[in-house]
Every structure is written in C-alpha cells, then in structure tokens.
Length: 223
Image (cartoon, rainbow, N blue to C red):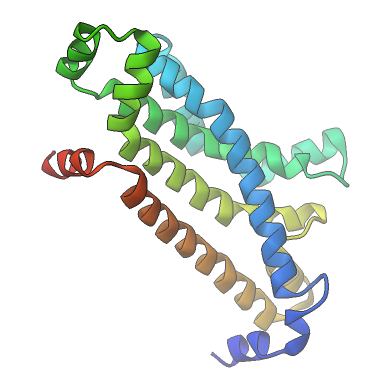
C-alpha cells in the first residue's frame, strides 16, 4: 500500500511525457488501433463464414492459434525483421491476438441463429445480404460484443509489451520499474493496467445494454 501511495502521490508522475495521463493515452491509442485492425479483419470474415457456413476450418485454426500464440516471442521476431522505431512490432502480435476471439464469436453468433428466423426472413422476400444485416447480426450481437470485449481486454493487458521495444504506454512503468528496481512504479503500472481492463469490461457491459435490443437480451437469458 505504501508503494502505491508513493507512486500515485508523486506529482512528477502526473505531468510530462512520462506522466500517467500521457502514458495512459499512449496505451489507449495503441490498444484502439490494434482492436480496430482486428475488427476490420475478423468481423467481415466471421459474418461471411457464419452466413455461408463455408470455411469453418479457418475458425478452428484461429481459435487454436490464440491459445498457442507467444506474444512476446512474436514481438522479438518482428523487431529482428523490421527493426525498432515503429509500432508494427507490437501492433502485429496484438492484432493476431485479438482476431481469434472476435472471429470465433462472430461466426458462432451468426451460425447459431435459429433456422426458423432465417426461413422467415427469406419468406418475407429479403435477400442474402439483407437477411444477414437485418436479421442475423442483431440476433448475434451479444456474442459479437462478447468477442470484442474479450479481445479488447486481452489487447489492453498485452499492450504492455510495447515497452520491450522502446514504445510508450503503461508498460513503461512495469518494465522500467523492474529494470531499475523501482517497485512503486512497477506495482503502480500493474494497477493502472488492471484498472483500465476493468473499465473496458464495464464499458462493453454498458454498450451491450444500449446496442442489443431487449428482445434479444431476453432470448439470450432464456437460453
């Protein structure tokens, strides 16, 4: 507790390029960019595979890859290939880490929609794309948001590896603190990362209340 008081009570930690606000902004920006790239890749793929039910093997491969991905090792490998001074050595592993949960949950959400709803939509004269966007996506939204939430939390927690390649973010407090045996900084950085992950969790819970229709929410609860 004293270490936390020393860290958060130090005025120097709240100003300048190395202050908490600046490091937090760097961390959030890096996480948002990685999540955005992941969404652009995984959501269209998940919608396509779930709707057409072709290419399901890609989903299985992605799910297994997520469990085996050595994020730090991948960072080091990309640094060796492209060098430092750019965010790509961190962005690529973060995107690779975030794609599987988004892809899997989007696919499962679309695939799991009742056949009766699909048939009713086609019976009303809707075409493939209209059925997907007007019927399947709204019903699958809880699972899609779940995938986004899992991916976002993983990215926020893992973005600390940016400090290994000289980038900013909250990981600087952890890595630099360990290197200099500045334990208040290390613990303070870990607390900030954990707090940010909890905020992300809360944010997605609130987003689900706004985006998901009450009828779909009730349907998920009944299941």
